Length: 190
Image (cartoon, rainbow, N blue to C red; front, top):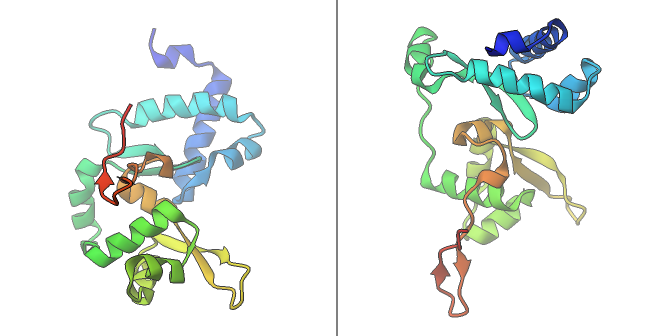
């Protein structure tokens, strides 16, 4: 029996409502918010999200439904990125510099962090790099630290997760550990 025969009419309406909300938004939408608006439990919603993801994420489909740390968003299948870029005459994003990658790693693994913390870890001024990452939408301000001068705190964004093709920060690889002698050792895998 196929998926379509297993779903009743109310399930189809719920699934259609989720699909419409995520499509119309264009931005990641909180699963919790969708459940509130549709006046249903997150558990009931998860079942419908599973059906939708199964349908959208089939090979050959041009649109994907992705989960980003408690949010849903529709995006283009990666195999179609070049034709979409050409059609929309989008200019190709320039790759991140080594400095930008280092700053992004410091923020991702330690967030929320201040610019002073990033500079302490890297040993150089990072103002331009942090501003560039914010302009690209990979990091954002997350408030201020309750210290003199009230420095800004930075964290990664949903776009950061999407660019790395991960669902949450827990999917980042573990950092290497330091041995008592100060040498890096690979993290143990179970």
